[in-house]
Amino acid sequence: MKTKLNFGSGTDILKDHFNIDCGEIKGIDIIHDLNVFPYPLPDNHFKEVRARFIFEHLDNTKDANNVKVLDELWRVCKNKAIIKIWVPHYNSKYAWGDLQHKRGYAITAFDPMIKGHLGGYCDHYSKTNFKINKKEYCGGKLLEIFKFLRIHKFLIKYFNNICGILYFELEVVK
Ligand SMILES: C[S@@+](CC[C@H](N)C(=O)[O-])C[C@H]1O[C@@H](n2cnc3c(N)ncnc32)[C@H](O)[C@@H]1O
Image 1 (cartoon, rainbow, N blue to C red):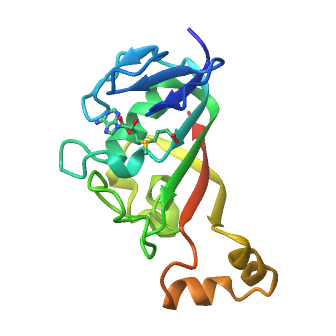
Image 2: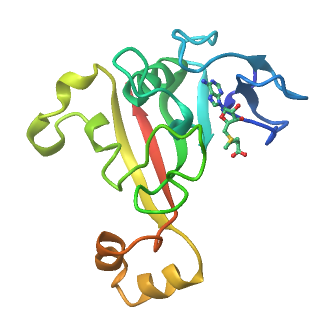
Image 3: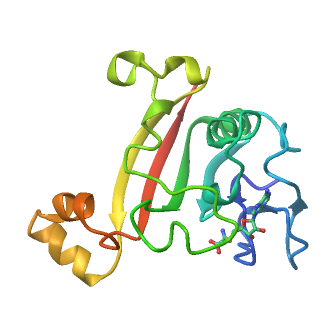
């Protein structure tokens, strides 16, 4: 089995990845509902995960939620594996631009997965652990100008649609 996972691949099938999605899509390696645990994937196998525009589609309930998804990705990944995540920013039209979206995301959304974060107030959420190597606000050329002027954080906080997408790189800590 390939050691890169395309998590919620959709039609963005990548030949050098193992592609998983709930859809019957041409080229898919395995069809699985990613709200159902455990995933039919081995322990400690993947060194990289690409999770582009999938987290916001998954359930946000007690039994199936983004913490449980990250716990499961932690299980199937090797130590130091990198999980690349693209999600819609909560304050943009993309957050609620699809009937299937369950939630939007702030730049701090994945912080609770880091053990000891802010004195460890979220440590009981999960037994798994991650480092966050990258957190980026993404958008168009205008956002890049605001970043250059170092005013983007202020504008994103108080105005809509400045930032459409957030990009994160989480590192698995075992
Ligand atoms: C916006 S598409 C993203 C596809 C691809 N990652 C990309 O970037 O083009 C969202 C994908 O999530 C998949 N999806 C939604 N809910 C799912 C679930 N419960 N289990 C597995 N896949 C799911 C859909 O089938 C769809 O392919």
